Amino acid sequence: MRPGERVGVPIGAYQVSGEYSNAPGRNFEKGWLDRDRATLESLLGIRRAGADFIVTYFAKDAAKLLA
Image 1 (tube, rainbow, N blue to C red):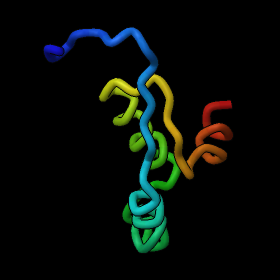
Image 2 (tube, rainbow, N blue to C red):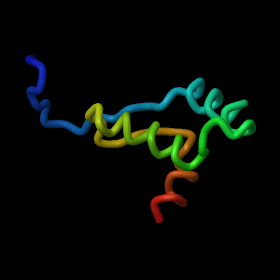
Image 3 (tube, one colour):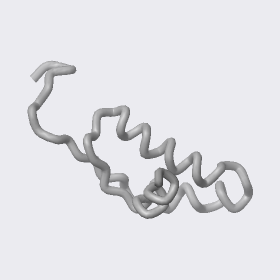
Image 4 (cartoon, rainbow, N blue to C red):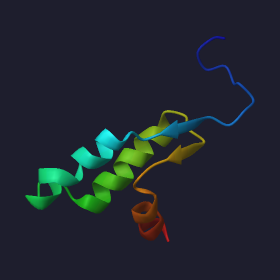
C-alpha cells in the first residue's frame, strides 16, 4: 500500500489515557491552557491525521462543546 492510498474501511483512533490525564493536570489548573480549546484541538489533530472515528476520554466534554 502506498501513502495516500485509500483502504476502503473506516479508520479509528484511540486517544490514550496518558494524553487525557496529562492535559488537565497543571496546564488547566494554572491557566496555561484553555480546557475547551485544548480538548477540541487534540481531537481535531487526530481527525486531520485521517481518523474516521475517535475513541476518547474527552467524549462527553467534546459532545457538550459541539452541541
